[in-house]
View (tube, rainbow, N blue to C red):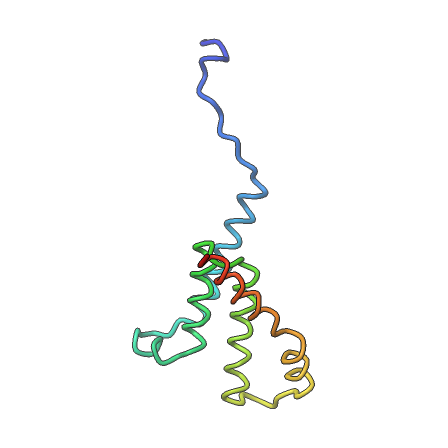
Length: 117
């Protein structure tokens, strides 16, 4: 049996961190699949699907934080709900979003501007 110093090093893996990263990737791909239309033409015509996919790609490439991408994708879906008036709109919820949650767009713009300098 060789001495311990000759044995190949064991990889150091934080299994909890690895599990969290895998879960985040699986969640992102599931969200993309959930909104991805069946064809490229349908994708090009579906603004919400394009936004969700773009935000996920920006997060995946480290351009914007993943949490921001998730919030922006949710905002895109909400915009689609309002634009197409699926069901009855809760105007109090619309007001709350418009008056308090526009900061994500400010963060998005600031993040892109910071990366450009």
